[in-house]
Image 1 (tube, one colour):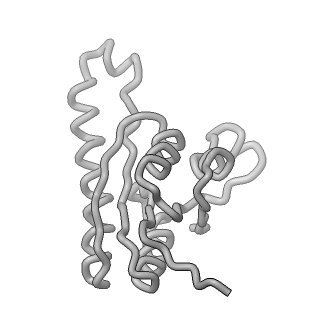
Image 2 (cartoon, one colour):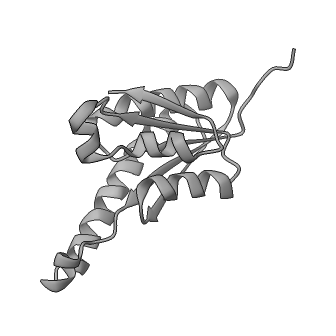
Length: 145
């Protein structure tokens, strides 16, 4: 039987407390397999109302700063564990950008968290994790918060 090792793993983070378990699992998998870890944060473009009120630049700077904090957390934790890591900020629809990045960079595993919402909450809010699982050709490990 062939041993499976990963060369590239992605942790998709939104910087929330709930993502920390996913970050831990992604770092653990990377450490055990010797894989490079990508810490990915997706900046969602500003809404029309932000543009209408002239808030677009300020809101994008805020989201970029949040993304840098989120990926910086992953980067610090990964380096402390001896894992090679690269932070990546993307802009667009989160599920699409996560899937696209994984395919373009030959990522072998996507690790991400979920709120574990069901029923009406899931319908109303949508689920990035659910959309990634549905559309990704790359295996996805979803870690509940």
